[in-house]
Image 1 (cartoon, rainbow, N blue to C red):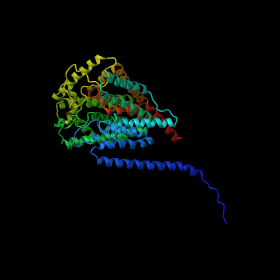
Image 2: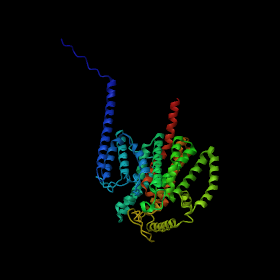
Image 3: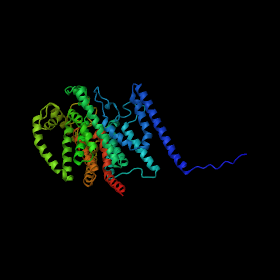
Image 4: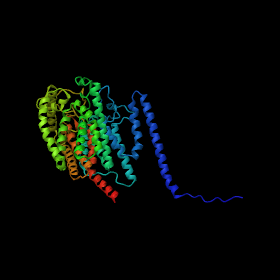
Length: 517
């Protein structure tokens, strides 16, 4: 005798769990696939005579699905890459971070796909494309702009105009892109950060990544000085392609490390990060001194003065400490400069940087004379077309002869040390004013945010943004800072974060109220 089967019953709980289980399974398969692809790529790379040809293609492709679920990862990778990887090789036997072509175009590293973009730029373009697609699919506004968008966009428009003008009047496209790309990268980094960084935790993670990466570079510099060079910098110019212990811009990152450490101390905003900086401060200081960059010393003095002034205005409880420290420094510094201004040791490096402006040694005198002649050539090139500039991609007209430095820097006759004046030379008065307005607007936005902010950590980020911009200007005026990929990316990210700080503070206050309710 057969019994009739009862009806199949499916609970709503089973139905609701199926999408979640499917999504979890999909993520597990995705992670495993990515790990297998990366393992295969690394294995092929190790067996290949040109490993970067394989890795340069495999890593971006592997990142694509990860960025789909975590687009904010792109900002973290950008900050880590900017702080870790050099834009050119230094030729030391202990070098390894300068072997990573994060800022080299795919065509220059002979990758399987020859593209005139770098892995850093491809990462930004991928992340922006994914972000736009996801927001369109969710019927949201593709991108948010914010108060700094139009000033940054107009300057980037002028950069694009400079490329077209330069190439259209006989300039080299490859050279024009080499000049313009760091400025375009700033805009891309700004867009990413403004659209992806939304809360205090994300900002803190960015600073952790930056501090850890710069601290790591401090350890590398200390090892290189003490072990690789046996504490002797005499033969440095014969070894290093950059004529320095580390990349020139590394000194600016070391300055920003100490700048953030000073902000943490004065504003008492994060004890863990301050202790972390304190632990790594000695190797970072040693690397900073051994790198011997005058622009870095200038930037450090400027940052200390600005932070001290802002802390004095905003922190009444710390004014006694700030005033007493200022008086003490005013008494000690003149004696230090007199005592160590001509000392060849590391301890005298900051003093030599100051005295070189008045009594330069033979090396600094030669550098000063070169820069004076170079600046005069830039001014005369500006006079040829002061309104619209010459555009990118063309060498300067050498009204005054200067030594050929192509053995150090291939574009020595195209990009001068003073890249502030270079903006005027390439983009004319219109582009120069656009650049100054972009920087000025960011400084004002950050200063107003710092003044109104109650959260000590986010207030410190606003002040740090000011310090970063001023350091960038100092490096730009003396050591090609405006065309450095690493610095422009850090500046772009902070320009994107700064307008969000007030919203983050309001969100924190609302969260605190809801928790107490």
